[in-house]
Length: 440
Image 1 (cartoon, rainbow, N blue to C red):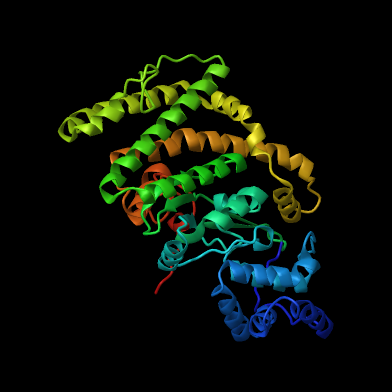
Image 2 (image 1 turned 120 degrees about the vertical axis):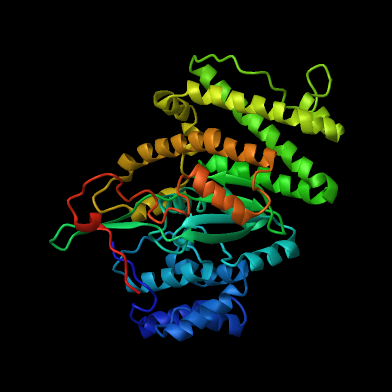
């Protein structure tokens, strides 16, 4: 499929412009309406300035642009050769700073300081996406593309994001791309490696939660709802209580994950003897748990906290050892219902699939893979992140935490410029092993 930039497309016909102008004239004030029209201009400078004006309006600019053209494009699946559609789509993506924005209609900041100002003004937390490549480009990393298909268009998720979050994305590094040239004009373009993570930041930009990799729509929605409540409670705590409050939240979440994992294994007939761990503030007979009591005496806590954390680690290791690839697939099958895509996501998949491909053949397997990603990412990677928050391991600063995530969770450290793709101790038969480095 060929993709078009605003600059590469020809100007609309006079009839199309006149028709759109009639619709726009009824949507708002003259200055804003002119930006909506000029965003589609074939003059790059005029188009860029109009898009910049719309972006100063935030979500209102996104809504204004959508409302002006909603009747023309909603529910339509124009062909890639439709230049009018491609021009409008490219302009809308630029207003939102997200590819396929017509299907989610979300406004994204690309400057964290601006996002923090918006968060401080509204009292909302920031959902900060870190990815390889750029969210407004077709060939960003695979997970971010799946977010644009599985998560952001979902009606409930989109509404939650619009109402309760300030959205921000930042590229960690360019995404590696591979082009297979068949020598007869046919090419296959894909991306390789790369992962993405959503951080929840308070209005000062401090991380309070994080969700690594792809999760099902229902799991992602629960995460958003839970994190919004966490931010509200965290922001109301005195500064002296914030650290322990956040650590306690993550201890409880880690314990919940391990309990849910254990329950899934039990459904499959796998019984485990795990080290005992009480998750609530009191045991069944009302006696406070050790983890709740420990902070009451700070010196005592310094001695006992490592022992309590060690119990969590032992439980995690026992669960990981008991879960092989076959069992992972069986656990994923327990959660298939949560991975079902809504009509908006399916419509986007239908539009993007290759000619001749039947969505009914693709969708079931894709949803199974989403379910598998969900349980593995939640039970393995999210659990590890909770442990880092409990131990306060590089979690106070989002940039430092992100370096740790990409190095230790995603195994693509910034110290490796080749992202593990460069052959080591392997003969390729290609001069310099195919490495080409530009000469400055």
